[in-house]
Length: 386
Image 1 (cartoon, rainbow, N blue to C red):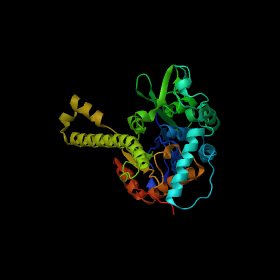
Image 2: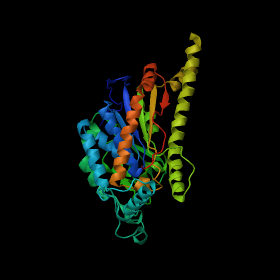
Image 3: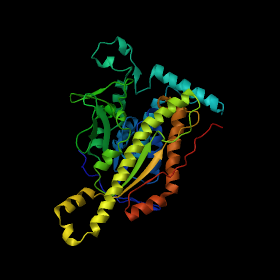
Image 4: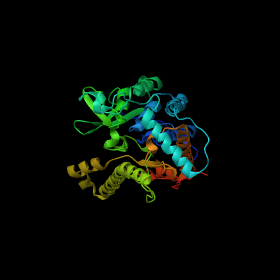
């Protein structure tokens, strides 16, 4: 099992010295997850080595592939997963027009609803309404058995559990309603834990692990940032890769309404978690500054020492990387697994890291000063076709 503390790795980049731990936090978002793959690829090309990767839903799949492969093999395995997922909807030329692009986008999503995604999930032969109550077949519209085989083929589970990159994935215990993290620092993980993190009802079935049944962690929180921060042991740089933006224009069509509802539902939780954690850190910093001003005799008081212990923490630099949808992407963007969309999302992830690295001096100054701060260094514009 991986050590509970992420390994120290002292690597310096041009314009930036990395802290003791670099973490990658991957949000859920279905087909948008190829944006995360682009981020991972460009980070590797930039020389950023990951110590800890945590994911929810599709982020858990990408996270497992990262932790379960050596750096030189990760992108090939990520490409295999995403190319296979998009295999039923290959790339073909279309007119460079937003309306045409939107029509193709919605048609592609409809194909996924009808036929599933290769090596990921497939429609059940018998609809769940006609399955025997109490069976797994009665609890979802799709079967994810292909995903288990895919994960076992693409992930070296011994490396994921015993290797240098710590792996954490989040899921929800169906009966208790509690959020649960499966962590390679505490237990051995396998395909079940990743599948549980992405078991979004009613589309995908729950997953049983040691007598308990789990659903997608995004039902409670779509970001695993809290788990990372709750177990932080060193100064840390976190790349938080979100797939739904908090801000967007006012909807103009019913498709825009569906899309905006998803953005608010998933991004608001991420924004709330991030905001609360940063405010808590600001309060702890004030406590530390106040304790430093106390005379020596008061510093030895038991209550003061307890307060000082509670306020102790390590610096954090949190870099937000947020996918901002194209103008033609509506409410079905998270299950539109076409090759064209996959390539575009992947390229957008690469661009986000390139933009961030172009402004790396801002993050670098924060790391050197040992402060806690959050950064979003990418442009916020939505893109049009043609």
